Image 1 (cartoon, helix red, strand yellow):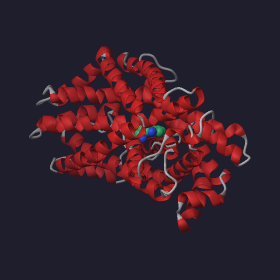
Image 2 (cartoon, protein in one colour):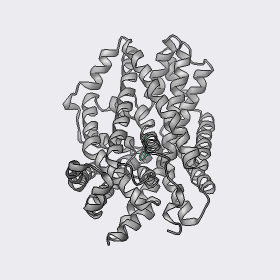
Image 3 (tube, helix red, strand yellow):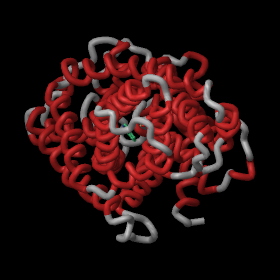
Image 4 (cartoon, helix red, strand yellow):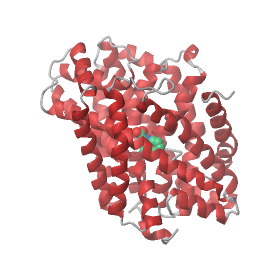
Length: 450
Ligand code: TRP
């Protein structure tokens, strides 16, 4: 804690914060991951479990995490240390901050590779390389991309370079500026795609798949995955929203902002599902095709639409924007930490953190390339990082943050910060009991410990 808390600066307004935090939340998680997880885990039932996790676990934790950030005004590690000291709690709470910095770093390493795919597709769309493709060709284009480490390397590197450039510009000129433009545009485009989906023959099949729950499909595993996804999609449990909270002016209501951000995030996930599944069913593709889902199904749809390549270009442009507004949030905790603890400039810290992340991303790149030949306990390098972060580190960070917010931070303080009025009691029940217990049970189950 060598620096004064205020040295990072603040958001220029409440809206700027809501948009930036929505930018963190809305990302590949909504548009790429949610649809394929849903496809693999039985559709409607998964959506219900997911929404229950957002409301019962995600929302209270988001409020707790933002509140902790604003109170601490430093990097997640330094914030947890400072607040623990203030409350006479053990210094061990810092662990939550460390988990966050490391998890964000790990996630961004593969996130950037996938975001690179969206750039590659954008390029193909703009260049008209995806006009009039059939299901097999669409699949082949995706397989070819995964088998071309050099092409992926170019896009991965470009994505990381752009992320670094935005971060080097700082809060107002970098993060705010980019998110203010991209997030509203993303909403509009998705809306247009939903309207298009409604005209396809597979629309009702898609809607049934999305919204009609088949409870026999719910397994302990799928509950864990839904919860992990709620954390991932809201961007919780690892300091993204904590560091964004650190830049939040005191007079903004955290309660209300968190509700808005959660609604925006869930809406985008559902809108992405509505855009994608009708197209999947219209083209008789299996909904359970995993991480390739949007890269194989959407190009098909676009290639048959009037003005398809225009639409397709804009879509992949927006996937890219969604990704980059999340990428900056994933690595911001590490950057804040480097500037605080090593007195690096923001520029230098951005270069170091992003450079290291780029390097680690090579592992993911290679795991797609070798067709998953290298595995550890049945998981490729990419799947391993995904599992360790989304299914272990984020829930663990979430438990600590919820418990810290609910139990360690004084009630008087949380009441004042959250501004929830009579709902404060529910928040307390959520952070003190529901979130830690539910998350712990699911986590233990996932790890096979009971
Ligand atoms: N929420 C983003 C997405 O859905 C990714 C992200 C940003 C994230 N910050 C995070 C995920 C913090 C986990 C934790 O794509």
